[in-house]
Image 1 (tube, each protein chain N blue to C red):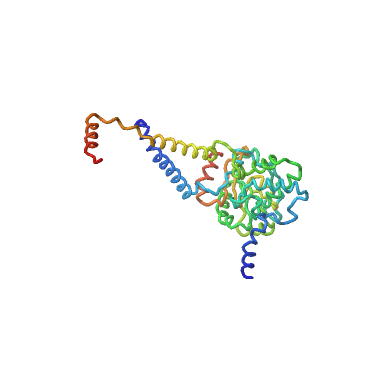
Image 2 (image 1 turned 120 degrees about the vertical axis):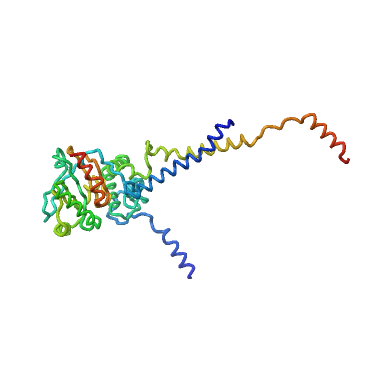
Length: 187
Length: 154
C-alpha cells in the first residue's frame, strides 16, 4: 500500500471523531440555548395555510369565535395560540401574550379540551389577550393543526400562511428572539 | 405455596395484553377492521410519550388518534389513506418506520455502511497478513549455513 493512502486511512478515524465531536457540541449548544429539542416534533404545517375549521365561541368569554376564513388576507401577521385553563405552562406564557396584545398584535385563541366555565374564569383572573376565541372541546381542530400539547403558538403571515410554530410556553426569550423579529419580517 | 404465588405474580404481566385499548366502546365492531386499525396504530408514534405507538399509549392524544384511525377505517379508507391523514398533520415524526429521504439517508444507509466498512477492514487486514517471501540467502549466508551444518553433531 502506498504511504499516502496509508496515512489517509490512519487519519480517517480521527476525522470521524472530529466530525462527531462537532455535531455533539452543536447539539449541546442548541440544548442550552433552547433552539434544539430532541423531543420536539417539527410542525408539518409550516409553509402551508391554516387547515379548514370553524369553532364555536367560548360561552361567557369576551371574544367572538373564528374559523379558517378569518385567517386569510390579513392586515398583518397574527398569532394563533392553543391553551387551556388546566395547563400550567399557559400561566407562565400569559404575561407575554398580554404584553403582545397591549402592543396591538392580534392573538387568536383556541381553547383546548377545557370546561367553558374554567376557561372564562382563567381569563377573568389573568386577563384576556385574545381578539377572538374558539372552543375546541373535543380537540379535533388541534389535531388538524398538528398540536401535540398545550400551549402551542403559530405565527401566520398576511396571506394566512403558517410561518412559525412554537410548542411550549412563550417565554420572554421566545418573545424577543423569535416572535418580535418574525412580526417585523412579515409586517 | 409461596413459590406458586410468586410465579403467578411474576407471570401476571405476561398474561395482560400489551394494548392500551381497553374500553370496549373504543373497539370497532368488525373484528377484521379492528385488526386493521390496530396494525395501522402500531405504525404511528404517540407524540406525547414518543417511544410508544398510539396503540400502546395511555395519553389523551393517543386515544384521540386511535379514535380517528378507527373512524377512518370504518369509513372504508385503505391503510395508506389513514396513515397519510395523520402524516399530513404531524409529519415524518409520527411514523415509527421513517420514510427514505435526504434526511434519513444516513439512518437507512447505516447497515450498508457498517457492513461495507467491516468488509473493507477485513480485506485490508488480510492483504497485510500475507507478508512478501524473504529474499533468497546470499552466497555468504549459504557458506555460513553450510559451515554450521558441518559442525553440528550427528
